[in-house]
Amino acid sequence: MNLCDYTRTGLLAAFQAVEREAELLGTRVRAGELIGLVPRAAFPEDGARVLRLIEFNPSRILESRLP
Image (tube, rainbow, N blue to C red; front, top):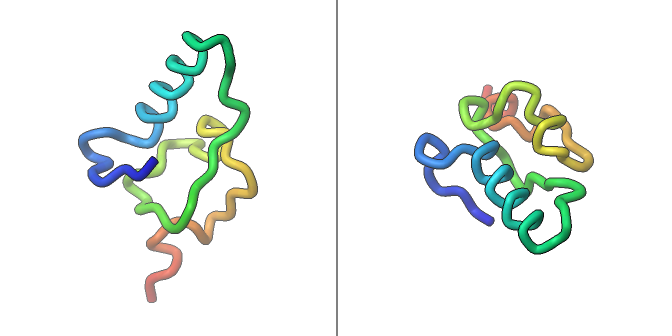
């Protein structure tokens, strides 16, 4: 999914909503994936672990790419 306004719906809230829906369907979320870059303010504390991101690299934080 694409999140357009992380101040309205954060990454963690979206991830947890998907986890709840998966549980209702009798399955579970095994991992999350970040495509592209994410603003530091949008990334939750300990985000790579709580979002179970596969192959996360801190260079995916937008501000790490700015001069």
